[in-house]
Length: 288
Ligand SMILES: NC(=O)C1=CN([C@@H]2O[C@H](COP(=O)(O)OP(=O)(O)OC[C@H]3O[C@@H](n4cnc5c(N)ncnc54)[C@H](OP(=O)(O)O)[C@@H]3O)[C@@H](O)[C@H]2O)[C@@H](O)CC1
Ligand SMILES: Nc1ncnc2c1ncn2[C@@H]1O[C@H](COP(=O)(O)OP(=O)(O)O)[C@@H](O)[C@H]1O
Figure (spheres, rainbow, N blue to C red):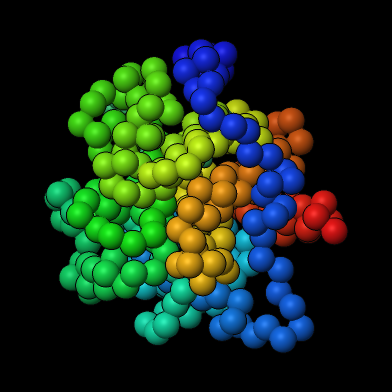
């Protein structure tokens, strides 16, 4: 589907841009410590997709958290620690959770190991802000609490029990259906990223170059959003309608970092992650 067709199908959403994103960034102050900044819990990756664990963690750290607790499978944890020794692999208090990137769905052969499943179950019933991605999307069923679902069109089609073409024909209506069904904010990925909450006006973000259509880019987006939820946890618990602007902010950071990494050509997902700090610094200047 062309961008023009996507636009025509989504005339009801408003563009969420740089200035709006700048207003949804948490900047630490002199009295902050690693706990007050926000701790993100991450359960991602698997024996099949250990890379997704590294990408979610890298993106979250680069977006800025006080601490990241990684509680995924052992092989992925070793890989994560090797790359990022600042990650903590002991359980403990967190302010938000990112679940599912690179993990099997509960109905898939093999499933996750029992220890990982227990971490996921605890997170799902914690009442804390959640990002549910990839293998954790179906866990939204029957859950209460503030959560953002981050499907691509194929995953949203699976969730809704429709074919992918019908999601692509009207991304906004499809995302809205899921938002209402699950009482969640839905961030639907694609060239245009659509964000819809169970209430409130839908938004869209178009900051990214098409070079971003590359494996692992969605894992990085999930990490960015997880970090934003951890650093805005109290505000989200007070006002869950903040989930929409925070999800859209994640898409803006992701797209801008992709553009910076690209410079007009191809790039890797780790290149994108490496640009996040400067993109955030640029946006913070905008609101000064
Ligand atoms: N480095 C890592 O560790 C990485 C790990 N990753 C992890 O992998 C897991 C699986 O995620 P995934 O998006 O790849 O698969 P999945 O959710 O089953 O959706 C498939 C959809 O795509 C479509 N489709 C398939 N082939 C197509 C084609 N050639 N050209 C066009 N369309 C095609 C297909 O549509 P269909 O044709 O079936 O309608 C269906 O809609 C997930 O946990 C993720 O986090 C990834 O992030 C990558 C990096
Ligand atoms: N044509 C495109 N132009 C810009 N961004 C895109 C395009 N296609 C996909 N993206 C972005 O790339 C990311 C892909 O995520 P996803 O499909 O989950 O891939 P993966 O599972 O491999 O990480 C999303 O953030 C999506 O918005």
